Image: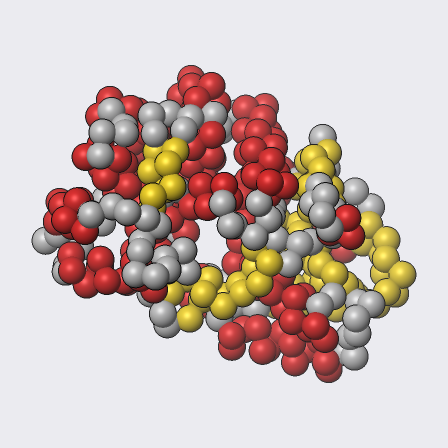
Length: 348
């Protein structure tokens, strides 16, 4: 299956997302594969068997969200300069969301921009992170606060890479799938309720549906000036949870699940989501052993951390509020007392 990302105003940025077995890839230039020890140990041989290039270099960075920082970026940049890469060279992001985000960011800044392709190896990166051109790294102020919009030249999604995925990583990807269904497609949500994603056929359908939905959003709003913000359902709360736990307690998708449950509580108080709908979402997340609760030590401190999020501006916090199933509202006018009421429900 091939899905087009058509950025009509910038034809040179159009690219295809291929959902199928990894094809043979051939490049008449230098190529660097950016990966981590876990992925390289499991899958690098398969990639190398399918890859031909003038020169191929493997650059390995430590695994984990807490290594998604400028130290790792500088390490990779140094290796590229060591190997005399130039503007005609190519980077391959071979891993999950952390690798994809960092590689894309490095591609955007190396000699003011070179091409890269995405070969995502986790469920979360296949359904979300590898599509759309958002790149970046974290710093002490928050998640993805340093980055760029830089589109890949191609995305290759091969579900065979998921056969070695740990259960927690699989669940983390499911959280992003649920996010897409709640915000955009009630029929898809019902499919997820009735069918197990541990079945290969169902999983491939879910991946394809998520990519189709995200591709449509990216076509309409590449740089998140409008509708693309809807993809951040659950993420306003999620990013604070990740920051407060130093990106080491929860996988990103696990924090998304927590954020979804928290913003659903806000939606109920606003009269936009029924309790029974929130319970359906909660039950679907729990089916894949996702965490949905987080104990807040200081509600006021948690609230102030919202303002460090890149989605907030002019002293306004942007929330993506689910409106029933299959709909949403983007709001930056929610009264602090209402948000604090949600936070205090989780406070020690």
